[in-house]
Length: 519
Image (cartoon, rainbow, N blue to C red; front, top):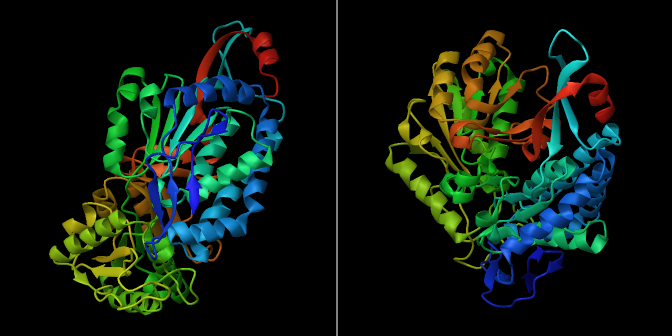
C-alpha cells in the first residue's frame, strides 16, 4: 500500500490521520492512502519564500538550468517505475504513461538547455535602451527580475508528471521556488517524482515542495509577490479568481480551464488522400489518448458536408479497434477515466448530447466484460462519437465533456463558417486546420486566431513533421482566452515572465550598461 504525504518546509509530514483512499480506476481497488494532515500552509509558504527564494535568486541562469537538467535526469532514470505507477493510479496505457512522463523530463531538459546560453546572468533585459532626451547619457531600460515570492502550482489530474513539470521548469528557471499541489486522485506519480528529487540530493532546501490532499488554506496566506498557476475546471477557477488574497493583494494568477478544441478539414481534404488520413488519424488519437482526458483533445470535428460520410466511416473503423480494460493487460488500447466522479461527469455530458438530438454513432453499448477488470468494476467510458446535422448545434458549443467524446459538425466549406464555429467555443486552447488552400487557411487564421491560444496548420508539406495538435511543446505558448481561462504558460522564455517583474529603469547609460552587461 502506498503512503502519499506532503513534502513541505524541507521535510515529509508524518500525520496518519484522516487518510484518503487512493484507487486503481480500472479495478476500484484501494492501492494506498493520501495523508493530508500535518501541513502548516503559512509556514510552508514562508519557508519556500525565505529559504528557497534567496537560494534561487543567488543562482545564475546557467546554475538554475543545471538544476533543471539534474531533475530531468532523475525522472528519466526512473521512467519504467513511473510508467507502472501511471498505469496503476491513472488508468494510463503504457503509451499514455510515456506521453506524460516523457513530456515531464523533456520539458525540464528543454528549459535546462535553454539556460546554458544565458550564462552568469540572473535576470532578463527586455528590448533595447530607450533614449529619454537629447543627451544620450540619459536613457531607459526595461528589465525582468525574479519576484520575491513563491509559485503556487495547482495541477489537474490528467497529467500528474508533465503538468507540474511544465510549470515548475519556468518558475525555477525564473528564480522562484515552487509549491506544487497535485490532484489527489492521481497524485501517486507526482509524489514519487518528489521522493526521487529529494533522494537524489539535487534539490536545494525550500526550492520545491509538494502538498498532498486538499488545498487547505494555501491561497489565504499568499503575498503580493507570490504567483499562482492553476489548471483545472472553470468552476474551481472562479473560486481562485474570487479568493480575497487574489482580489485584495493582487496576487498574480494564470488559469488554464475548459476548451472546446476543434479540428477542421478544409474544403480540399477530400481530394488529398494523405491530408485526409492525417486528419482522421489525429482526431482518433486525440479522442482516445488518455481516455480523452486532455485539455487539448479534439471536441469538435468540422467537416465539409460532402466529406461527412467518408470521415464518419473512417473514424468508426478506427474507433472499432479500441479495446477498453485494465491497461496493464495485453491488448488493451484505452483505460478508464480517473475516478467515479469523472465517469459520472462524462456520462452525464454524453446523455445531454443525446437528449439534444445529436446522433450517437459509437459508444452506445458498453461491453459486458473488459480484460483484466472484475465484472461491474472500473470507471470506464467507451469512445463516443456524435454527429450533428449542422455545425451550429447549441449543445456542442455549451461546454467541454472531458472524456473520449467528440462530434462531427458539417459545414459549407467556407472559412466564414469555421470562424463562426471557433467563436462559439468562447475561447480555446487550440484549433487545427488541415488544408493546402492558402486562402481558406488565411481566412481561418485572420478570423479565428484572436479566440485561440494556438493554431495548428497542417498542410501536405508538413503533415508528417508535427506531433499533432494535442501535443504541447515547451517552445510554444500554452493557454487561451475566454473559456480556456485567459492564461498563458511555456512559450520558451515567455514562460518565465509570469514569475518575474518587469521594471523600467531610468538613469546614466554607462551605469545601466555596467549593471546589466550581458543580460
